[in-house]
Length: 214
Image (cartoon, rainbow, N blue to C red):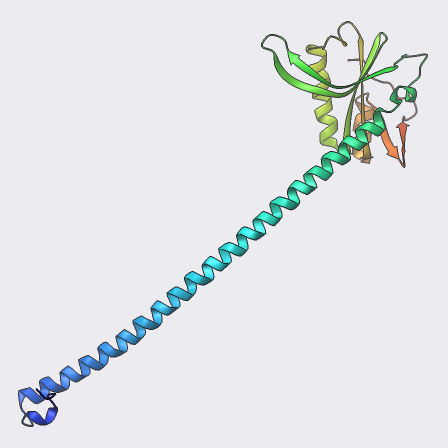
């Protein structure tokens, strides 16, 4: 059968109007299909773009995590280096005839002996006489570090490790860099302050400094 055309219908009849409406509908459907096809392409392109962005973000996150781990390792290594430099012959920084501190111990854990729970730790503990000194070492010493050391000293006094029992407890704080505010607060609370100067450790003691015995 041959295709039906408008000429097959008498002019002015209902069939001619139906034919025109049908052609307009077909044209509208064609344009709709074109728009749907275009929309589908855009959706596909957007999905591909989103996938690429997610992959780039994943790579960026992995790089950030890698750098963070590297920086964390560097900070830990630097902190350990500063602690080692501070610990080396640290007892010589204090009056031997007054305290007689000559034996450093590192990484002393402080327990609540009632439930064997670790409460805090001491970076360096100078001992061997009637005095002991708990030294906190930081890469950079801020006010917050001094405040934490105050709380640490109270814990040590209330839960003394074996090497501290029956001894007079002194405190000190040391760092690669000690801010002026942290230094002032430490001296006010009776802490000795030590700071790295080149490859040596300098004891910073203001006039009329009175160390606290905890």
